[in-house]
Image (cartoon, rainbow over all chains, first blue to last red; front, side, top):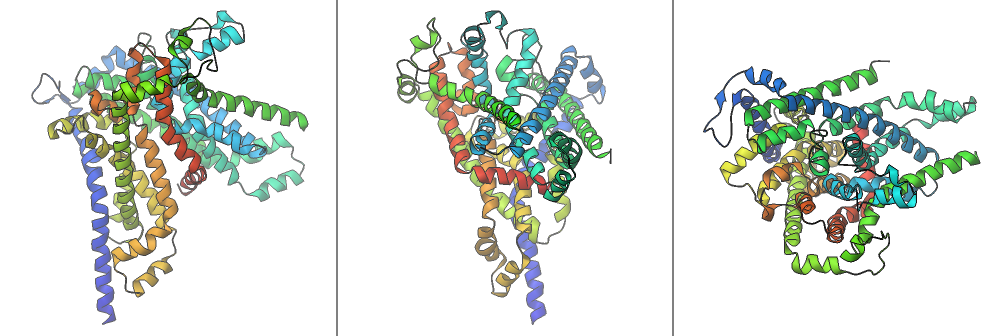
Length: 299
Length: 273
């Protein structure tokens, strides 16, 4: 009697299990798995959405041709330059702020809220805001530099000049991303066992020595997560160039993602866009694996 | 010691000002008249504060209300769907034995490592064929789909941390599987549900990539895309400021209300990962 009840309970759980998972899986299948496969197929075809009735299979030739596209190669270069600049500043600044939060806790509600606040502003709104602040004639930044600091020769068209466009884009992205990264580092710091820190103080380690020899090594795991998140943010930039600079001036800030978007939805060359999207995915994968290897390989 | 204190707190103050300034300035400008904004003399605080920009939005600029409406519909429905689906899915992955359970969840996490760019084109083509392009539902569905793997994973973690004894005692008391989930497990998972709600709210409210691709007509655009249109329109900074303030109120309000959940959620997510 009991065994029968047990068996049907097991079966009931199994059926409910499938029922509960089915809706989510349907969503994910329709909007992630199927598109991924479709995209993979498209990357081997030539398909202009407006002119062609159906994709035409051309195999790997598309991949070779993609690298002959100078704009594509330029977009790769831009993306990598941005990513390196952004990543370094992101890690250094976030870690520094997290350390400051960790050691000094007066007024913490105010300081922490102010650092986290930009996180809740969606990146597209932030970009509109900053394209206004960076505006050459009416922007807050040039007003501050020109009138408050009295250095009008240092004012620039931040988003319209070749030299400053990329840097300005990095600054906006930093403004938006540092908050989250700081939380990651802070939670990693708080997870370090207090005993180790106390033992170090007893042994006579001063502030700096504590940081370098005790804290940093213990942050390795946090660093992997923070690093991957930072890399993904960096390599996938799309909103910032679209909204802040339109890829300009010229092509100076054209990112890979944006070039893919243009190819697909302005030139309607779907096959080529799919190829570039996959190449981007591979680059992301490579950098993520590199990050993991570098952080954990020095044990 | 005192010197380091001074340096650190000054640095933090500078950081705080830099981080808060853009929004604060936006707020101030939203109360300025157009003459004041474009006058030769730059002002920081409004000299004659007026609500003219907000009046414009609510009375004559009805398209702003359309954008706002779209954002609200897409976000609210999206958040509800995501929360429900990841609550049941998460429970299933945590406690219900069915074939392929482990492999499906690994597969789901693998899928989200691909950038959205790879999926945009097929989703666009699919939505045109299904005629849901430029609709709210056309944006709700892909948004939910892209959030589900991560939120389901979070809920799974939450459910797994609930002691099995509670579940077993419900079973002994004669609860069906559904009743166990609904009456016993769900209330215990309240933290996870709040985290899921907050996370999906933020992700959908400001989502740009899907929106700019799938909502090409103004009537269908949510705020995140519509705001970028303002750039070409003679740049009325006062109205821009007002719209940004209005568009940022929901996220900021939720942030202030749920601050501790947000931080603990990211923390536990990071540790459990």
